[in-house]
Structures are given as C-alpha cells and as structure tokens.
Length: 635
Image (cartoon, rainbow, N blue to C red; front, side, top):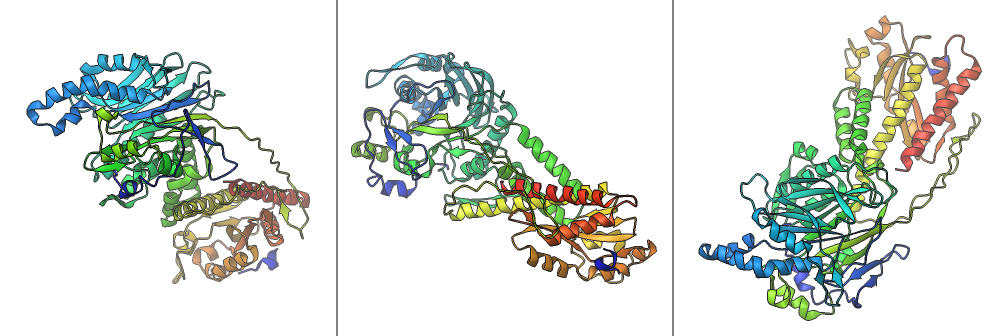
C-alpha cells in the first residue's frame, strides 16, 4: 500500500358541499363578469363569469373552452320501466336534449366538449342542434358550431350510441386529427391564423366508485394519445403544442386521475377513494407515466367558491366532478426521447447490481417532472362559475337534485368553462462568467440567479418536493461521475469499474474475507504509468469538509484489503487511499478538491506531458464539474 504523499370520482357527493352551500364565499356577480382577487398580489387577476355567462370574443393566441355532460336519453331512461324506456327516451330527445345543448352553448366558447351525446343515427339531429345560433338572455347571439367530431364511449361495443363530442367553428380552427378510445377522445386542431396546433382531450370516466383502475387507465390512454399527436410547428402562438383536458371525471379534484394528470405518474401501492381501495402493482405503475404536466384551471380556491357544485342527482346530493386542466407550456415528443437517452447513458455508467436498479426506478418515476418543464405560455383569464352565492334559491334547486327542466336545468350537470390567454414572457438576463483561481482559493462560476419566492408548502407538496429533490440529486451525481470518468478515460486509465458493489469487483477474487462488501465506490480504475489502483468518490455537499472526512473514513480500510488481493498482487499494482471529489453546493470547488484533481492529473499524465498541460487539464475538469453543478441547481 502506498499513501498519496508518497506518490503525489365517480359521483363524489361530499357532505362538505352540502353543508356549506349556504356559506359559500360571497362574491357579487355583475352583469357580465367580475374580477376574483388572487392570493398573490402580483399574480394575474382572473375574471369570474356568472353561471350561464358568456366569454368575450377571442383573438389569435387565445382560446375559450367549455364542457358539459348533457345526460343521454338512453341513460336517463334506465330509471324508467323497461316497457316505457324507448318512449321516455324519444320524449327526452325532443324536449330535454335541445335545452341541454343550448345551455352548453351559452358560454360561446371557441371549443365545446360534450359528454353523453347520442350519435350514429342521431348525428344529423346533433349537427342541427350544434349549428344553430342561440339568443342569450341579454339579447346577444351565441354562434353555433359548424364542425364537430363524435366518438362512441365504448368503441368495442356494437351499436353503441352514447359518446363524446368536440365542436368548433371552421373559421377559427380546422381539424388536424381525431382519435377515439374507451371513455375518451383526443382531437387535434389547428388555428387558421398562424397554423399552431393544440390538443383537446374529452373524457367521461367510469362512474362506478370502485372502478379506480378504470379511471386511471382511461386518463393514461388519453395522455399517450396526446403525446403521439402533439407535434407543434414552432409557431409563435402560445397555443402551439398546448393540451387541454376536460369532461366528466366522475371524481373530485383530489382523485387519482387528476393527480396523475398533474404529477405525470402514479406510484405503486394502495389507493383509497370514497371508501374503496385498489392496489396499483409495480408493473401497472410503470405504465402510468406521461410527459405532460397539467394544471387545474379552476384551482382549489376558485373551485371552492365558484364551482363547488358541477353535478347533482336527486337523492344523492351535489358534487364537483367536471374539471378543466391544461398544460401551461409546450410539451413535445422530445420528452420520451430524452428519457430514453438518459436511461441509456445511466445504464452504461452504472453497470449492474441492485443499486443501479433502485436508482433507475427512482429516476424513471419523476425524471420527466424535474428538469424538462417548459416556461409558462398560457394563463387562466376567465372561468365560468356554476354557483352564484347571492342566488340562494338557484343554489337550493341544484342541491335538491337535477335534472329539473322546469327550473331551467335540463341536465344533471352544469357547464364549466375557461378562457386562456398568453402570459407575458420574461427575459432571462442571467449571465454565467467562468472564473479561475489559484491553489489556495475556490474556483467559482460567478453570480447565479436567485430562486423564486419560497412559500410554505403543504404536506403533499413537501413530499413531492422531497421526491423531486432526491431524483435531481441522483441525476446530478450521475452527471458529475460521468464527466469525471470521461476525463480520466481520455487521460489513459484502464480497468474502469463504475458504481458497482465491492463483491462484484474482479480485483477481490481470491480474498478470504471482505468486510462490508456492499459498499460501492463511485469509480475504480488503474493508472498504467505508475501501476496504481485508484478509488474515487464524487459528491456535492453544503459541508465539504465533513463530507470528505466521512467518505475517507468509510473507505479507509479498502486500500490495505485490496493490496492483499491475489489479483492485485499479480498485476503488481499499488493501491491508494480513496480520492474524494467534493463540489460545494454554493458553486465552488474547495482547495482540497482542487488538490485531489491535481493529484489525479499527475497520476494519469503522460511521460512527456508538460506541467502547463497538466494544469490546463485540471482547470478543464474543474470548470466542467462546476457547470454541471450549476445546471442541476436550477432544476
């Protein structure tokens, strides 16, 4: 042994909504709209439209959407005796369905999503209802929709007449593609002005409370279809590459489908929803992932005060099951490709073993969420309220149960809608200056931009933040190790072993006893010039000195153990104590780390390499490590 010095829901009818209907937050509706003050004074103001209100006309780059379950006569008649169901359904189509579609069209939204719409032989009737203009209560005209796409709710069922419908106006948008699947529909539209494309997802998830898996499977399929067709054309419009999902989720905003759309993955384990439970296996959890990151357009505050009720059935009470979600920025197919590249590089880096599998599993869960999130391109400008806190009589009618055609509620659902507008883009003026220093000073990357204002997170946010930070830390470590390994290989090291436990090293063969054989130094290699076996640990820490001491203590016994190994003796190798490369969280390299890099450069230097070239090699790897650290600190 030689020392270094010697060498150098379903129907979620929650009682909360019933108990607090009379105590909803007081908000006075004006004739058209009012402003809802957000909690953050710097945040854009959202306009709240009264129930059955209408959105203003939009321009290029803006989009208004609305969604409503109109209650299909085929399903509504199921409560009737079997002998009279057909007759009841025929009356429903003549009297109630036109009123339901008329109510859905009141908002005048650019895009209208309908659930439980009868098609097949009823499509001409649907086309007629969508096409006609409607006169609002204030005398204004709500234009009809001359284009639509219908998809059966269960495509595999022969003769299925109940389905989903997305309608639009051909003078504003044109159809790019349409895909129907069980319980969902994805329509890709293109703006007539500008050519930008965006996706509309329309869903009607399973209503049975226990069908947790069915709802998750439907939204998972929805995300895959959106990712397949959303190829934005790099238009200047903020709508280019955006995605919007809305419809009847048959569960509230806290359910697993909404969480899946928001987070991008569903962890394995037990899911509890409305007194029902379902176990998500690890294999299923691998399938439930996507590269989109949706936001709830209503959010918890507006939903509680303005849209606490979107459905109400007689005898079952009210609930909030209709949602509108959107991606605030562009999400392209580069997401999937990026994940494959990262996983491939990591597989080459890590080799085999249980540690690699654990890290790959952790990385695959939330890798997409922590570094590929685009800047926000869209914001919520206006939302359509379903409840008027000042109109107690109307609220009571809704709570008593729907539909109530005589009171002006032709369906058991109420329409929801949102108007999206572009956000104001902020310029990034952050400059990174490369600064070098001498042996006794730190090497730094200059000033860095400060993080956004910190807010007190909820328990859920803290857990997600902890998972995200764990993945960021692991990815940062892998990037640092990859850079150091590449640098050493370029300087001629051989027999490289990376991130593998000791018992898998070929150097330990023949040892009678190996203590703590699960330990896995980040890197082991041989410097052939001097015949030296080197072990290297790489880490980032806020306390470089203490971490260095901890790492040195952890591996202090390996040098004498490996020196006695038959293979090491047979190769006439000297074994050094472990090198520790620590990058400071503050963006500097401590003097001890600089000395370590110089020692590695000298051990791997060619016979004719000058001191100047060695110093340049040290500076090169030092700046590369700092660049990697700086990149991942911004994630």
